[in-house]
Image (tube, rainbow, N blue to C red):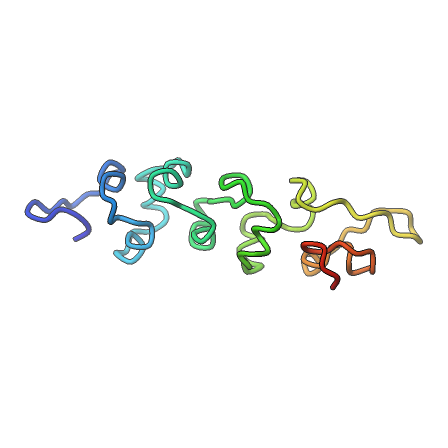
Length: 144
């Protein structure tokens, strides 16, 4: 069972999770608690952050909750680069190039010299940003 020693319980509520320091997010998953069950136990992600330490490391396993690295954890582009989230995680959280621009994490690309329209890079160019055209920048200012 998940909890209860002499008096095992067949149900799990937020109070049980919150009061038991051994009930970490990882242990809940290991014991077979699904993301949907976690959300029904406590739908407010901020409670999971404050009481159970949901963090940047948990983002990939909590994308459907969702745990958003910028909105909920106040991360930035450097955090995303440091955590090296897979593209499927970034796309699940709607963190493509345009969304990062919208969230002010990437400066807008200057207009293309021939069309005078801003470039709209594909998702594959997200990590390279404006650097793909030799304009510098890119992730953390690195040239690609």
